[in-house]
Length: 170
Image (cartoon, rainbow, N blue to C red; front, side):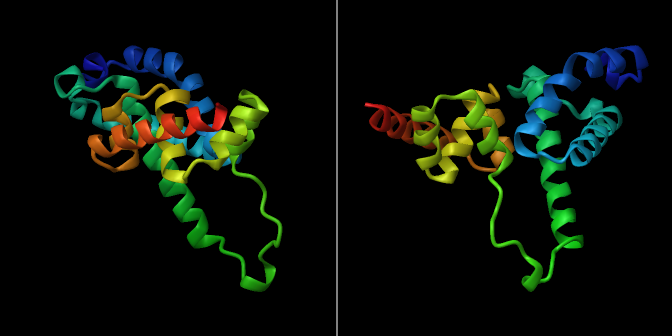
């Protein structure tokens, strides 16, 4: 990241080569629209190139991939908001059947029926924390930044989610 911050194109290309497949998979877990995923990837790496010197790194208790994921997650939320604002169908044209969320489809393919059912029964805020920490491998701090809640709240939700999962699977 220090080399990228100094404008080293090769370092940026290496960062992109190493992290873009990982980041694309995580974005696809939350969005099934390939066009939005591609747009978010582009916006994320453009933001990283422009603001690499703002990365505080280990001094702030974070990692480069955590910082990258935080940028990407926020860009994805922005893309969803833009899309909802510009493409909201009239109430009469709104579909009566809603398709499952992208993360639900991924969970169906990743975890067994019993575990998947238990995950789907979790409150959304507990599932978000569990998904960020377990499936995405983020730290408490990174999850806190991603979800915009205090670290203590992340820890509490993670504990509540583990207890609920343990009870559901007992």
